[in-house]
Image (cartoon, rainbow, N blue to C red; front, side, top):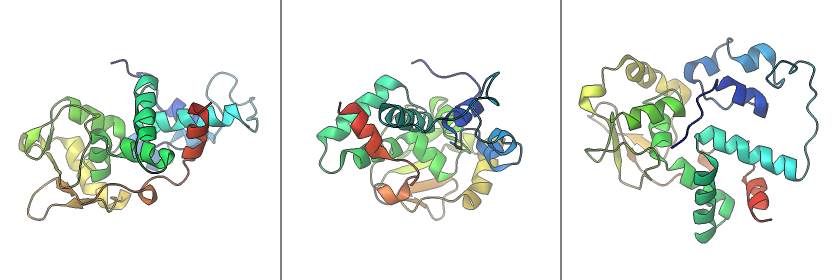
Length: 212
C-alpha cells in the first residue's frame, strides 16, 4: 500500500498543530512548531496568512488532521468511517475508537515506540506479538483481553528500549495495562473510550463532511 515518505514535520505545520509524528523530537525545542510557530510550510510560508476556515474547508482540514495523526490513507480512512456508521452509537466516536484500536496505535500507546510511524515499522517488521503470536498487520484490531508484547528477540533494539524507558513520562492510556512479571507486555483491559483520545479532535466535522 502507498505511504507518505516525505518530511513529517511539514504535516504538523500544514495543520497548524503538533501531531506528534516525529517521536522524541516533538517534545524538544528543535521541533519546527516550537521554532517557527504554526506558519505553513513552503517557500512563502512566512508570508502566508492562515484564513479562518468555515464550512467545507474546516471539515476537510479536520479529516486530513486525523488521517495524518493515525497515518492512514484516504481509502482506508473512508472504510473506517463506513464501518463506524454501521455500528451502534455515535458515528464520530466509533470512528476514533476504531482508529485507536489499530495495532500500530496500540503499540505506540503502550510505549513500545515514540511515534505511530515507528510503531508501524515495528509491526511490519515482525517485532510485535499479540497473544503470543506474531502479527505484522498495522491495521489489526485489538480486543479486550489481548496481550500485546514485543517479541523476546526484539526487546534489545535500542529504539524500543529507549521508548519503553520514557513511556511513563509520555503517559499510557488506562485501557492498556502493563502485565506484571512480563517485560514489555501490556494487556487490553477495556476498549478505548472518547475520553482516552485527543480532545482537540472534532470528529463531528468529519461526519458532516462524509454525510454530504
